[in-house]
Image (cartoon, rainbow, N blue to C red; front, side, top):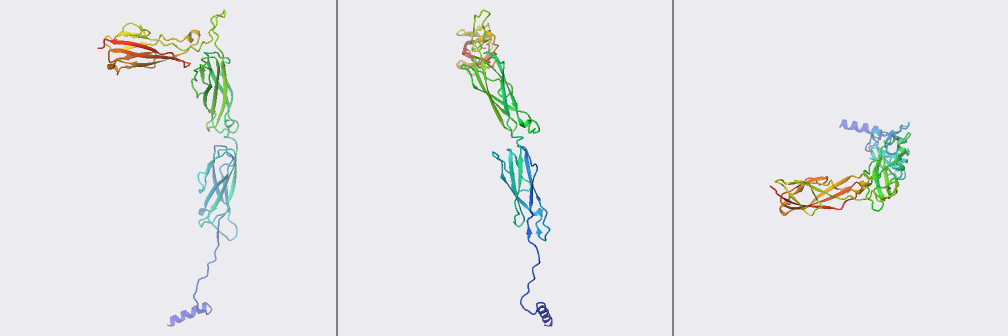
Length: 372
């Protein structure tokens, strides 16, 4: 009892004689505040196509007695508040320390950042303006389109070309290599023409002007960024002049003739022309018949136009028991028919010249016998 009484007296003395319950006073402290942040950029004057990386630096804490949140406890909220007209730029992330975006148009980009501490308190937002120049934003410019010879005639090979400039590859820009993709196409041909470009994706394609008239073409030039420039050209082709010294023998259509298909059965046995209705062929114990389209002709070669010929063979008909017979080649001047039965076989030959004109079809009929 004496110990309890002593403790009670001590408590009464400490509280000024009041016997109510005791509570400890608050410890003096400070309210935590979010420091200001300063946004940064890896490049303040980037060119189009460049990746810009953003960042944030914590400003110095005020000198007062405030308690300032540690920068390691901060998270960031980023937003692109403004982009140039036509831009589709966006941040790759919005809540990381260093987001990035790709500059896709010249002009002003405005980035805003907000710092948030671990308790959810947000600081004042800060903005950064980034000015992107036009370097890297230019499309190729297709200048003069040319053709050679300057005054082509039907049957001539016409070679095309173009002058191309791109500000992104010149001076101090050097945004990308001066390498371009070319796409040529005919937009109009003279009546009756079957001309085709030898390659539509080279800088200097060519075509054979197979008839007189106007040939219209378009060209699209694309740079490594996908930007493109276009241009058009028309090539006027005159009729070929094949008159002799006295002016006789004019052939204004030289260069516009289609080839004529012709063929021989050359083996086995004697050579026979496919123009006959049916060629009897003694296989002499073998199973192969060789044919050759060497007698095929093109009148254009007679007027000085050296056009190449392509050949296409087709097996049209076989005897009932010879359905498994086959041609060993279908796209060459010569071919071999391998037969599996005696009887009548029919083959078709079509010859095409380098202008795309095709011959009327030739049907060669053979009657095979003497199969071993």
